[in-house]
Each structure stands twice: as C-alpha cells, then as structure tokens.
Amino acid sequence: MSKTPAMDRRKFIKTGSSLLAFSTVSAVAPLNADTVWNGLQGLDVGRALVLYRDSDPQAQRFAAAFADAGIAVLALGHDPVRQWRDGLGQLISEQKLMITGMGNWVDYSIVRGLAAEQRQLPLLEMQHVRTQDRADWAHDHAATLIQACACDRDSLRTALRALEVRGNINTAAPSVFSWVLA
Image 1 (tube, helix red, strand yellow):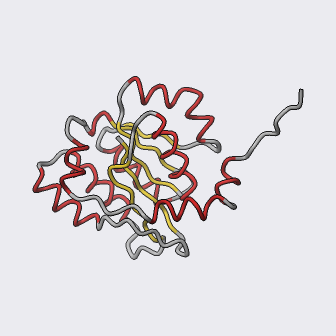
Image 2 (tube, rainbow, N blue to C red; image 1 turned 120 degrees about the vertical axis):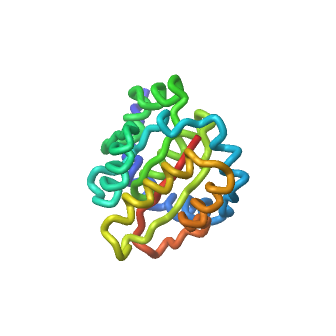
C-alpha cells in the first residue's frame, strides 16, 4: 500500500487553484440589506468567533476591536484545516457560533470552505486593498460589523452602505479579506 504524500494546503491554494477560486468569488453579487438581515436574524454577535491572521497588523486591529467588545477571537494557525479538524469546527458547530474574521485570500477561502461543510454560508465578504489611508480603518470596520449585527433593518442598510459591500474581487491588488459566515 502506497502512502499518500502530505499536501501543503496553503501552497496549493496560492498556486494553480487560486485563479479558479478568484473567478468563483468575483461572481458573487453584493448582498442587499434584506438578505443580510434575514441571515442575521436570531444571531447574537456575542455568540461569534473572530478568526484572524496574527501576522497581519490590519487583521490584529480588526480582532482587537472585537476583543474590546467582549467577543472571542482566535488567531489562525499555519494550517487552518488541521486547526478546524482538531476541534475548532466542532466548537463552532456545537455552540452555533457565527464566524467572522480577517485574513489573506488563502485564509478566507479555506475558512469559507470549512464553514460550508457545516452549512455556514457568507453573509458578508469583502476585499480591502492594503493601501488604506488610515491605520485604524480595520478597527473601524470591525466596529461597523458589530453594529450591523445588533441593529434594525434600516440601520443595517446604513451600515452596509458604510461597509461598501461589493462582490468583485481585484485579483491584482494586494488585499486582506473580511467575512461574516453564519
């Protein structure tokens, strides 16, 4: 019996499959307030888990805003799939946690796929170009997401406009991605 060689998932996604993944995400239409509102019904932002790439300063600021609001945060390890299979996925499923986060394209595509296995689908997914003017934009973005999860339908429309929800991904731009999966 031959042994299957180990696969580095991060390298795989960064290479050939990334073009397919980008084309899939770029076809996602922007979500309207009613769709997001229906998805957020019954969700408690306090029952969320924020995943972030700890080597990215923007993702650190994003997670810090949630931590300041008393929401659990967890840094993604080198192999998010192994982290998920070693108990993170079970924890999220058992506690019915909403997943939000910020990281690079590889992080987002892996987390999105793993969450889909548990029937958790994107409510919001955004690309943020790394050349943001203000250093605190990621913290402000997190505060807007926290507000969006705790507001009425009309306030959510306002929050979504503030988030500049868009579905087209610029594959040439160095980016960080944020998401809400439920």
